[in-house]
Length: 128
Image 1 (cartoon, one colour):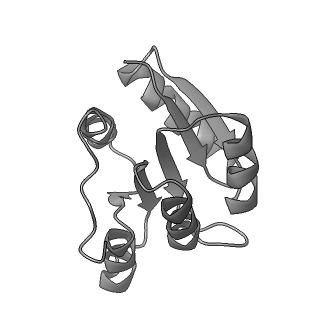
Image 2: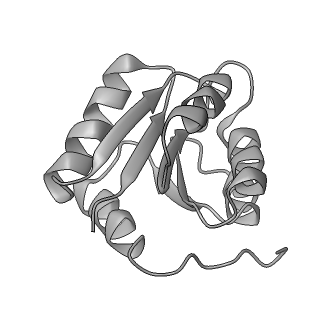
Image 3: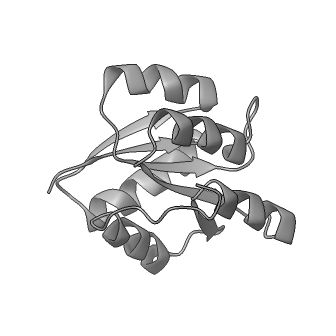
């Protein structure tokens, strides 16, 4: 089933890298890009998005803040947050919004597992 994924990262190079991984695993999917949380919400007005992969460190809202707003707007969306910061507080914040944690550098297999998991209903966070 074809879906639409959005990649939210202030680095164009990182977005290109993630886009390539998504399309290797899901060649029939559409991929939209946004450079930050504000652009994410502008893009949501233009396209129905099923999956979001969001960088943690961005100008404006960080990835967890953007994911929390996205979760409030679209409760069933599958979200992953990518970051090199694996501190307990960061990972706990990611899980608290019901998102998957994907450490940088991104591993192709891990991205594939996350994309495969989007065929299943989204697991709810403990706080939901």
